[in-house]
Image (cartoon, helix red, strand yellow):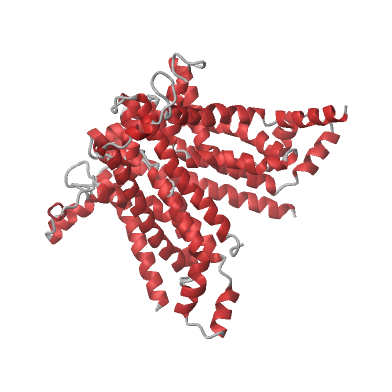
Length: 288
Length: 261
């Protein structure tokens, strides 16, 4: 009797979650599961690993590899430059007036992605862009002759940096603020130089945050579709563009291979995000 | 020494951010040879396709915001009040759209809700619009939930609920007239961010084949020279306006809180 009543009370509380559960079930979990299950199915509906094995073609392998390279490079450079800028406004002794505008701008720029961002870079450093023409006409430097092409891997990395650096600044600034004054003073009392303090105290404490944020930036770049398509069209062979073409017109010639391609993307971004969450939990031991 | 380095890094970064913005602004003004003019903007603004797709995306954004608020406010409230133990789980689920790429989610939609499925949403125009709206709500879920949940943390949910109940209020009244006004600043922050995300979204709209602003920009970019730069300036202005409004709302809410104390 008492048990039955307890059970009923639990059920009533969960009813409040029903709309939410229904929504995420239908429009987040189920569609994703459909892809995941489809990756392990034959066209007839049986279980198979063949789709995963079939991913190992030169075309698909290179798509993933180029994607990983672009995401990694833009995450690494974004991490370094973003950290430098965040360090400059927190511990670098810049006036407080420089801080708020930079953080506000970062909030805007990290959300300014997609198609318009590609346009901005085409207008600036594309074949007829502002910088390209200026260098050509005023300085006599023809960027094309040096092998520069915006519609390529380096061009994509440069463009991605426009939202990667601000994201890094937004995430790492609170971590830099969390470095306690006492730690630096304690190090100084023990005779440490500024360099020693950073090498042996500051950076080791920040290291999980830095690495974690880099994983997040990696996932962020890996899933970016719109910027890449607006910049290069369907020509560049990277994983999200290949998947886009597959969804539109089954370019791989096998729907189930398409699911496997999508599953690969989930696995990679999932792994990067898991790394981020784990490292963030570690960094919170010190930075609270 | 450190200071010089700091200035160097910040100035280098500022240049990296400023140049593309200057580039797109300059390009958008150069449609007429030799002189700066607003021609590209007039061409874009007069384009019926611009008006149609922009209008479509604005309506989509508003619908997404309305749906998101209706879904997230009661859920976050209920979790805080009744089942705090479920909070980490619900939060985890709301963060999933950041982990699963949007292109994968919409891929699932297309296959799961096609014309021969149990819920043939892509079979009709209205159904596809609805599906796209749910997709946008999914994309904005992490931001909406976090924003509203943070807002709920600053108020005493249990006491407010009990006070309202003693006065005879039902659940709809409590959520609509007690909780919602108290977290309005957070709701608006989430709403503006949702607006910024939805207005230029490309992947979902393109794959569901809906005439939204994002795919329009992409098609124009593939065919024209100066108009895309004008669109980029407009889009940047919109993003800036949304972020500015979030800042304003946060500032105003801090002000009213301080006045109450």
